[in-house]
Image 1 (cartoon, one colour):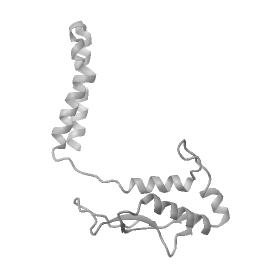
Image 2 (cartoon, helix red, strand yellow; image 1 turned 90 degrees about the horizontal axis):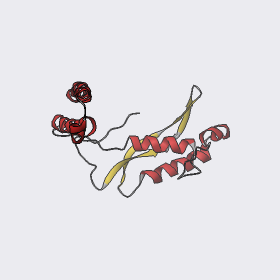
Image 3 (cartoon, helix red, strand yellow; image 1 turned 45 degrees about the horizontal axis):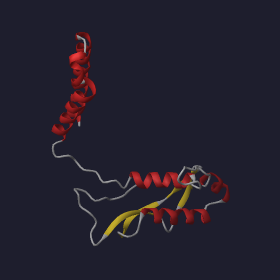
Image 4 (tube, one colour; image 1 turned 90 degrees about the vertical axis):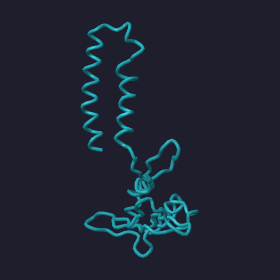
Length: 160
């Protein structure tokens, strides 16, 4: 899939944001027995919701796909919330949600993660409140766990 996206915290201009929309000219094609549903990633008014575009895509595909594919693509995979959810609806919702998230880079990720690691160790591993009633062997065991956690987590934090 080829798409351009905003970078460096640049939002769309003129009250528009990018949304996935079913390709108008050729919404789907068959290639080597594989159904390929084509979308464009275009600017839309902010008030246009992705769910609305997804529903329009599903309606268009329901009326244009060959009958033999309809039985597969529109097979039910219900959830508690949506009893009539289809396989297409599930995958379309997952795809558009996954590719629409905003990401940011923490300014002090190393410091933040190290503070969180220390907090985790103090509250979940060391159990400072129980130290008076803990045997020496249990304390040594906890120290061993702490060293292992710090070693592995330190490498992960450095990597990130």
